[in-house]
Image: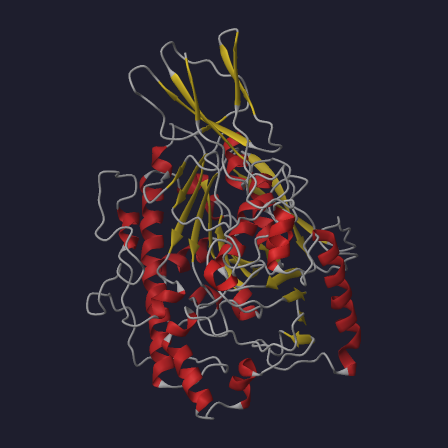
Length: 582
């Protein structure tokens, strides 16, 4: 059993942002968090998730499994994505770096090429960057992802032991610690589309580990991979008195979308419960750190994709073994870039120097951060350039295209009935001043919101002299952050691609591995700086491992065997797979 000191800050004053080491003058109360020596770590990740669940104050729908985790764990109400949409957010989680620092800030990098006239491309982090799962594998963890990726780059074969609908900790070696990720799609924005019906893919969680099981419609499009509304379980009365955010129109159409939102959350909660039952059935509950969170804010109009808290803030719950700190709340600011360093910290590994986040748990826990940061750029076929910095109370937004309106006519979002309703009422002149804010034909250059007094961020204080000092503070901090991570919001996307590709006309390629055989061992190298090297051994009998292993030392293989080898630097085209026969 290892003991990790957790610092609970009673009162603090800070000198600078989290990218520099901070020294606090706070009085500190030290408690002890006793964890297993090599704890398992289970991530339960849902999509498009605002604070619409009972542990965070919304009792509209019953979520017995999430409520149980919260009762036995710690809730974190101040987790923020660096982007209001999934792919840039997942890039931050996977690397511990801000999306706009590695070319991952446009949603998505490989699509809408006919609209943008740009080639598909990938984010290109510095050469020493690995996916956090690869670092965990190097420490002996069995790493699985079930099953969404969407990192803004192709994951190297070294990233996961398994990444598929069948990926599960049950496929690991006996007593091997695991880092397992389960992604739930029930709450995705598309779950609000008409005709309404739940996705059928969620049944994978009930059959996890059974690779002979075949799902109906697996691999079908979202639209075709659904139950009908009649088949969909009903978890909530449609006549429930929903609380409608003031930026939406309070109509029957919107209320139906709210019903769908909560109904989808209840279904997701069942899927969470299925995974938790498997964990308990395997006798692993008290050896596992369970983390539940969403990939950004809510799915409704003026939530997803926006840089307001409704698009960035998502709930997180962590259950520690033996219910340590059960039923408590930790209100510190946390960013998705903090996840990677925290994972390493929890297994007593120091965060990597390139990581722009900081550990909020474990041996290398840092002082609590003073600010979180976010960016909004291209979404599908429409481009904007917005940056934000937020402290515990105030949010500062800088609009780099003030001449452009906030609302972007994104086809995908316009499939949501409540979005169609807003547009209809707008055209009929029936929206009030609050609802019309999103449809202004231009934006202020700067915005400042008191997020405690004005949680929907509707009252811009930027021109109020009483808040000049706060405006100056956050504006200065934004300049410092942009400079620290090398983010130029005015950089056009074609210029970004040219920068990522170092002036080449096409995506850079990882060079083929170089194989040598000496003293009975196979050695492998790659001339591409930072490339990860994966290998599989196929015996003379045709046996091979399911996973690509990470090469780091010369390997010995049996006579008559074949080694398959691939090199891959993140953001580059992977090398060809080469073979060596013994």
